[in-house]
Length: 313
Image 1 (tube, rainbow, N blue to C red):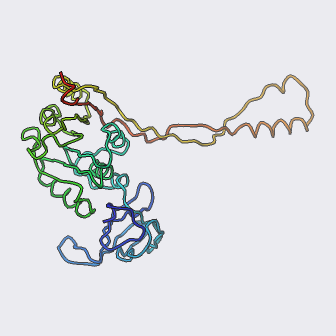
Image 2 (image 1 turned 120 degrees about the vertical axis):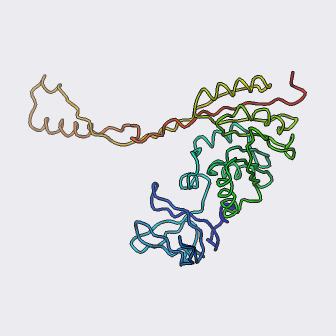
Image 3 (image 1 turned 60 degrees about the horizontal axis):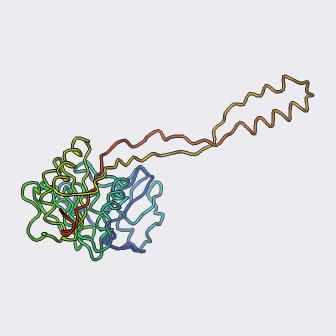
């Protein structure tokens, strides 16, 4: 249950992150027994490139501890939405942390906000939304795919987040969001192939004091069509963003320096030795370069404001 609140000590039933290196992390549920592929109950032993770990032995240890493996060691970390985004099982294409942070900022979410998310998918964004709006807020998330809904529901239960989220199987483009959410929501997020079809349904859910609608689309044609629909329905302050993460590396690089000034004068061996030593010191320069693996385009984020009743034309 360690997604729910900050903890110091690992307890039975917690979900923890086993950190081997930045590109090698795993989520583990701390319990004594697990079921194998045949449905048989076996000891919960996790195998890594550095050897095996008896997962139940983590009970009582501090988060952040260095733990022994049979052929090495690793760190055991408390999970966060950012770490979960990196290691979650992909059921769909997910939204990553740079886009997630911008989405939460643009929708002006805070503790107590009531939010709708459409396209639960793998739950990457859901975990960050819940952390932002709890303890008094609530997330209503929808997906039309039965298996994805079932798997996401089990994850929310396992992570101790069920009190903050309601998950429903529904095609919101056709069926809408239900009468129970009429004029109760502060913000709506759409991650759909045809977000323009859900705009009218989203308006019904927004509070009479107004609210925010944000959608994420990989293609600019989707953005254009949805923005046209938003304008027709009375939305204002439409803005579209593309959030690209660029990694830089700062390091010293040796650059040869050719000094031709010495050709103008006659120098003793001592003078030449001093000049050569000076050139050696000048050869190493501090440089900034782009990393080799740069994240590319993932999608366009569009935010729009629905004005309160009294401000509408």
